[in-house]
Amino acid sequence: MHAPIAVEDSEEPASPARRGPSWTLLALAVSAFAIGTTEFMTNGLLLTLSDEFAVPVATTGLLTTGYAAGVVVGGPVLAALTLRTPRKRLLVTLLAIFLVGNAVCALAPSFGVLMAGRFVSAISHGAYFGAASVVAASLVPVRRRAAAIAFMFTGLTLANVLGMPLGTFVGQWLGWRESFGLVIVLGLVGLIGVLVLTPAERTASATRLRDELRPFRFPAVWGALATTAIGFGGLFASFTYITPLLTTVTGFPESALTWLLMIYGAGLVAGNWAGGRAADRYPNATIAVLLVLLITALAGQSLLAGVPVLTVVLLFVVGAAGFGLISPLQNRVLAVAGSAATMISTANIAAFNFGATLGSLAGAATLEAGLGYTAPGYAGAAMSLAGLAVFGLTARATRSR
Image 1 (cartoon, rainbow, N blue to C red):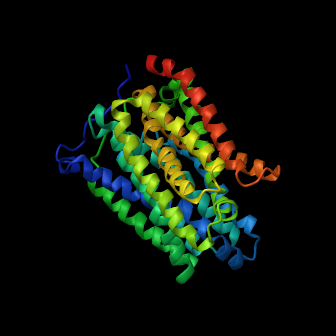
Image 2: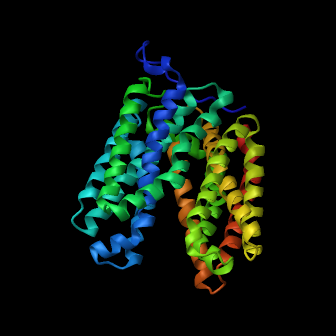
């Protein structure tokens, strides 16, 4: 049996919870959209920022790498420092830190200050999604937990589909500082929504760091985190270098990349929605099926890259299978952790980002070895296959926990 997540009693009987959990989930999703937009937005502004600060494009790429590092390092540290903070207050504080970081970016006089602003924004990222996952799960019955988490993560998936191109568009037409201004506006809307719509809660029962770290003694916990990092990371081994695959190998013109990435984004949204609902009924089976589907689609995308129609279909499937894993994997670590959910939830968000970094490095290694643009897809498939093996070995132990 899975240990239940502790749901705190409301401090205020007449709290906004009466408006229904869907309103709270919507506020959490809007904030997730703002955070996801700022995470991915700089990918479309690399050339603009390179010209602005007179640094190489490779250096501006560190804005993405540095952000991921901030998530991996800052999330667990910030979660540890705020264990005794009621979760509503914590979410508001994290969103305020996020806004400060983006304000620093918008006003940055130098590349170093811009990087610092990105890091400040990133340290709130992991802790926010960790705490928001716990809050989302606590709002609904056990049978709907994964769907609630998936709804909250819809903001992150839509950031890939809408937020990143919107931020890029604003940056190209109005200026990159205005792009960060857009993120600040979105973040303010999310913060106000969380402040008004999230019910006030007492601190979780396991408030001591020792209690929150106790689940990390169990192999099942590390197996769950490893499944997240390795299994999900395979997606980014391929997707980081999907553009040259589509243009050089498949033969699509660069003008087609916009609608091709929209198809990929549609897969993200569909997979996130379907994965969350399936995981509520068949948690382990959903993860296993999605990993097998991701492995098959990644390998097939490289094998059939010369066939445009199949490449487009597989682009959708890769996005759906990859992001379909997010809420089932997050729900899985929450089930393993029981009431000591804050640290492990944040650690799993860090594992997602660590896996994305690991996957992109694996893809880069294949290109540096001269294996061609189809090689990252095979590397991603191998990586996700390793994640499936870890999942199979630890699934029994996880059920025991």
